[in-house]
Length: 315
Image (cartoon, one colour):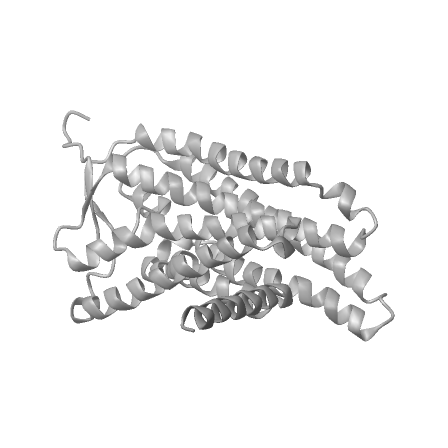
């Protein structure tokens, strides 16, 4: 490697080609980001404050909302800074740190979604055993396992990336340090890391999606045997929000990280990645609010109490 200059700093190209629209894009993404953080924090606050939401389903939702805030926060602030800056450089250490947290949190997110599907399966298919199976200690253990496995699984590929040589070019054609664009810049042999990345994609995306599909097949089979229409409707409504989020989250992840030839359409990947990093975390609070009867009841009750307090204060 003595004939090459080693690169330890990169330029995040981002949306530099949209010269005249960068200010407009900054304002749009900033608005979405603020609403995303506020919306997910509102869900976490509701779950923590109202005893009606102190159940396994909402405990998992609380963790999911926290993950959504953290995932989008690993990417969006840096993207916003780059949209206003002429200097879009990022050190290799910062790049790998961002990549590690993005994929660790993302992997944990998929595991939490799988646990949420299992929770719905037990609630609908094994209702008499639900309090025993999904008790407090079990729920805490499931969440801890999701976080630990999500983070531990990304340590090895991240450490291997620290051993790579980068000798030019130094431009990452993305708005964050995604794995594939970074590996394309290395002059080392990256086949082993690429295979590991693909295996982890299969594990955390396709394998968890398969488990969720199996859960919902069993749920649908059970619900169809419920004699009353109102009973079937109530059972389906408890799963609707989760299933909508699953479709949104897995659709974009499969397109970017699992499909063949994924490295050939970088510009398209950047647009689709906005779904995972920006749009989906923004939509999730609205999905869980508008499609969940109990959450809507809690919001209405809290709003009424706040209005009453405000009215009493002005008397």
